Length: 126
Image (cartoon, rainbow, N blue to C red; front, side):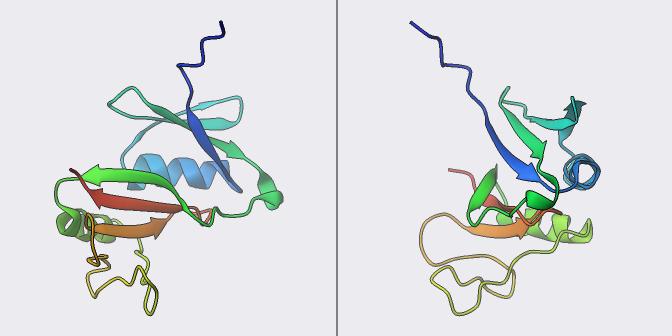
């Protein structure tokens, strides 16, 4: 039987160098580049592929990557100091407050985008 236990997820970007700079320099993730594609490597051993799609790239309309953190407010503040802009979802079912945090039920969560417009989040670790 085929061993499918080593799967990994991926999403596209329109600019690999911009993605590399954002994920490595701004977010501080371990990033490697292979064959023109990026691999984001996490402490858990999990990897995420960021592959080039050039002008055909369309940002995902959903959250492609969630970062569980102990302190959502502190993490939002730290990332904002690094230049990350958080989303303000006013008048929607996931309306965020003045701290850019959704507090409408479930874990605290705040959304931001990468340079290609893909949606990411910091979410309260359970």
